[in-house]
Structures are given as structure tokens and as C-alpha cells.
Image (cartoon, rainbow, N blue to C red; front, top):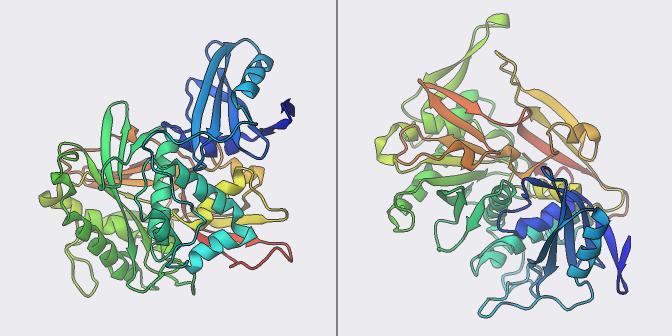
Length: 467
């Protein structure tokens, strides 16, 4: 620890600083430099990091301070320095820990407080998030993502606190995924929700959730298991719900807007139509999009997967299958999907960033995609989230974007470059077969996160679901 006036400067983890750095225009990405050390002042009014340039070995600094509305803003960058001690001396001065919070820029709107309850009250989901010690990590992660949003609409907080909790949480998850990958994220227009850009490539993304008509569907409630009939799970009601949600969004003709015209456009979708549905409904989406049902033929060593063409879904509405086979929808570049826009994902990410109530343990169990040639079954896993074995599943530990999937439309008028969203798993048509490309050796197909809480920590809902 060092001192800045009467305030202590203490070391914080790289992951904690990266959570704060989601507020930077390109997130916690400093290539070709890497984070050498990170610090905060006092109770967190300011933070900063020392960066190490991999090519020259020189050090530099970056200081962030809270604004009066609690948003992080970058206030200082210096360097190069020849030693980390010189860099820390400069950083401790730049953080100005004893100063008042940064003022609002002229004309800026003060961001609404996430914790101030409005006249509509709060949902059970928000009560769990904001009112239990077991979900403090999630509350911190949600709060940091909300504060980092470029321009949330006026209803964002009231929606998150009430019946649109799942939809707003999904938007925060997408935002974290994009910023984590170094994308510039803009919210300069009412719709679509996000404009993302990297190296001159631009894409517009509208977010939507497949919800039930039942209030608070997909949130706290009795766990709903997958249909026992595989065909029903792949081509029945779950697929129809994806279809109806996507078609409803497509009727709004976002591609005709002046700011969207001529650019790739995608719809991002998550499934919250039942409590727990995000764990098992994933396969229904590509079945609908590509009009191919994944079937397994043979037995033993002769087992193999094939794509069986289907023309219609088997639900009660008999919706045509193969959205991506219809030239009428060539303006839809891709569908982005994740089953991880959940409270448990935010809880894990906050926990890994160092916000760990004493005694709280998280056990994540589920299935990993088996990339062995010819393998058809998933690999089960069950690991303590804080264990070295869990961190070793991925080169940099758990990241926001590891469960993000992009299903590319083979007929797209404006295709999305794969390297625009490099951390996602990309699915695409190659000569009639659907293949995938990903940077991750281990991809989680579905999971649940169990919270193990010491006696007396407080009320909570055990087995918080996540994918």
C-alpha cells in the first residue's frame, strides 16, 4: 500500500480494474500494452493502472475517477516511465483521491440511480439482486455495466427494477461482451439498441428476449425442464417462440432507417420464456434459422450427426422453418444468441473481480462442447468458480463473451465480418453443412451456478440458474 495525502492507495486485482474499465471507449483493451498492476484510492473514488508495453518494456499510467453521478471517466494518461515505481508515483498524484468527484460536463444528463426505487416498486428478481448478500457480486457487476452504458434510455432503471428485468439485463450483458472485445459501442439513436464498430467495420444490433406472456417469466420460479420429446424440443414450442419473437422484430424494418441502411444488421436474442428455459432451448434456434434438424444416425462407433431439412416447425402454428433460406430476409445479417445474460453470469463475473462476501462459494456445473472429431455428446463438468481448475478452462479465465454465439445468414446482403466480434462462436453455412468457428477450446453449452452460503448470510434463492 502507498499513501496519497491521508488516503491509502491499495492494490486491486486486474479483473476488478477491467470491470471498471468497461467505461472506457474500447473497454479494458490496451494492446500492445498489458496491465502490470492496478490500484484504487480509499473506498474507490478513483482507480488506475500501470501498463507495460510489450515491445519496449516501458511503463505508462491510466487514471479513472468517479463523476458526481458515479460514472467512471478517464482523467489522466502519462508515460513512458522506465520503472514501475516512477509510474506509481505519477499515478498516485493523478488519481487525486482526496478531491471531490468529477463534475458533469455542460449539458450532460445526470444518470438515474440504479438503487432508487421508483413508483412502480421492484420485481422479485431485482429484490434478489439488490437485497441479498449472496448477490452483492452481481449487483456490483450490473452497476458497473449500467454506469458504463453510453446512453441508456430514460426507462432503463424502471424497466430493470420491474417487469423488464430480463430484457435490460440482457442488454447489459451484450454491452459487456462488446466492450470486452474492444468494440466501440454507440447508443446515438433510439433504435436499434447498439451500433458497434471496430477497425471501420460497423454493425447495428437490436436486442430482444423471448418472454412468456406470464409476468416475470424466466425469472424466479419453479424450474421448468426441457420437453422429453426431442423433436418437440427442437422444432416445437421453443422454436416457435424464437420464430415469433424474431419475426416480430423484423416487421419493424430497422434496415430502412437512414443510419442503418447499407450496414450489417443483426438481432440479438435470449430465451427467458420459462424459468430455466435458457439452459435447454438453445438448439431450437439454429433449427429454425437454417431449417435443419440435427439428427444422430447409427450406434456405437458408427454414430454420426446429420442435418435433416425441415420445411415447417411442428408447433401449433406450423411456422415455416429456415428464416435464413428466405431471400426476403437477406437484410438480416445474423442472429446473435446467448444463454448467459443471467443474474448468475453477473454474479460470477463480480465474484471473480474480487467482490466476494465472506464464505460465499459458487459451484458451476453443466456441459462443455466436445471438439473431438466425431464426438456427439457433451462433456459434463462441475467446478468451484474460484478454483484454478475453473480458471484454466480458458486462457484468461471466464470472460463475458464466451457464451456469445453469432448465427450468420448465408444470404445476407451485408455479412458481418467474423473478426468484428472475435470472442463469439460463429456458426455459418458451408456447402449445406452448418459449421462453427471459435477461439475457445472450451465452450459451455449450458450450466447452472449453485450458491453455497454460510449460515446467517441472509435470505436468498439457492441454485441461481445460469447458462
